Image 1: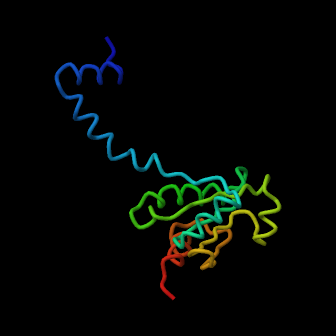
Image 2: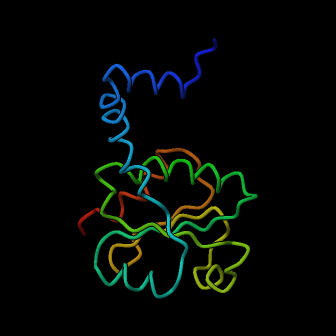
Length: 141
């Protein structure tokens, strides 16, 4: 008989090791809860009014740089340093008026501290380039 993952997990429960499996899964739940929100003017205004760090990612699903930035942002946004920030995604294809108002190409990341823009970057696809922009929202000027 082949031992599938389900049978293996059920077997662990039968011998009293199910709590171990649950405790290993628990640290993953905060990461799963973090997400980049779709951009709306109201949500953005509310987030910037709070005075904290806010990040806007101009994204197109067909853009390789956008997808690379998204992977980096998803990894970073669950780090303790960035968990107090709000992350928004502007659809390059469907929110042209926002893209024009921001005066950016696709694959752009903009950082705000409250309503003040603190940094921006277009086309960067390294973790260092993304972190450099994110850090501008935390710098005291």
